[in-house]
Length: 134
Image 1 (cartoon, helix red, strand yellow):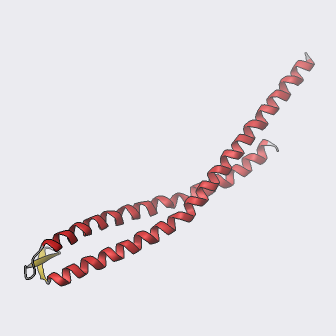
Image 2 (cartoon, helix red, strand yellow):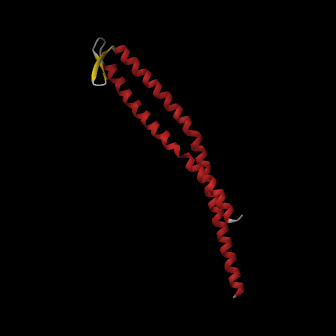
Image 3 (cartoon, helix red, strand yellow):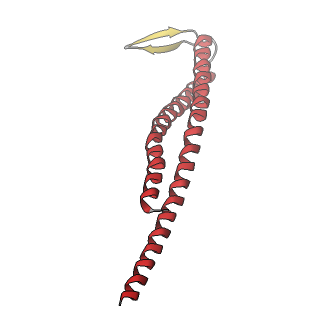
C-alpha cells in the first residue's frame, strides 16, 4: 500500500473526528443540567425543612411573590424530573458519537502504524539500492 493511499484513508477518520466535535456541546449542556439538578436538590432539601403554613416566596424578576408550600414543592419536583429526563437524553445522545469517535481513533492509529511500516520499508529499500550502486 502506497503512502498516498494511506494519506487518503487517514483523511476519512480525521474528518470524522472533526465532525464529532459537537460532543463538546452535549457535554456543556450536560454540565449545565447537572448544575441545575444540584441547585434544585438543595432547594428541595430547604423546602423539606419548612413547616406547613410557613410563607414561601419565589423570586420573579425583581419581585418576591408569595407561593403555596405544596405548590413550591411540586414545582421543584417537576423541575428535578425534567432535568433527570434531559440528562438521560443527553447521555444517550453522547454514546453513539463517542463510540464512532473511538472507532475512528483506532483506525487512525492503525493507518499511521501502516504508514510508518511502509516508510521504514521504503527507506530500507533505498539504502540497499544505494549500497548496491556503490
